[in-house]
Each structure stands twice: as C-alpha cells, then as structure tokens.
Image (cartoon, rainbow, N blue to C red; front, top):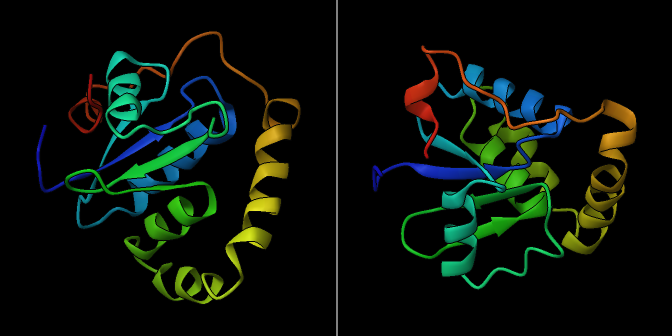
Length: 135
C-alpha cells in the first residue's frame, strides 16, 4: 500500500456508493485516493486495526496516514476538500454542526438501497482503474 495515499472504504454493493467512487475518481486530479470495499478482507482489516465500530458505519470511511480516520459526513467533506471544484463547498459545509450533518447522512445511508439499489457483488474495476483499488 502506498503510504502517501488516503484510503476510502465504501459499501461495495451499494449503487449510490459505487457512483460516488466513480465521481471521486473522475475529480481526483491529484491522485490522492485509493479504494477498497468495506466488505473486502482489507477493508475489514483496516476497520479492525482502528477499532472502528462498523455496526454504526456502513457506507464510507476515509483513512489517512497512520491511524487517523473520518466517518460519515466528516469523511465525505474531507474527501470533497481534495477534489477539484469542491474544496470551498466542503469547507463551508463543515461549519454545520456534525450532529446535524450526520442526521442527514444517516437518513440517506439508511435509504440508499431502496432509492438507488444494490449489486449482488462488489464492483469490479475496469483495467484502467484497477491500480486505484486495493485488495
């Protein structure tokens, strides 16, 4: 694993989450991120190493160098800060108290399968994107 990259753990069977990962890849001009499904062995290992209670987080985790990590709306906004054209809006949205942001985040997370659907298995990246996904 490249130590200089931040890792995004995502729900590999969620259509909304897979769409978000495709969006991030497209806008990650500085090549900051690498990706792994929460359901993968690596995803489970990284969660366990950081003592993250995965029963409360089932959609996105951002892992920075070492043991630092962000969850829920904090993860989404930290990711946005690295994407071209989204730094300002992410910085402004961080002024909203995390308790309010996470209420909205949790509502979307609870309904994501109903609204966007679910895959039978985790996304398989194209050959061009395979290097960005960790296994």
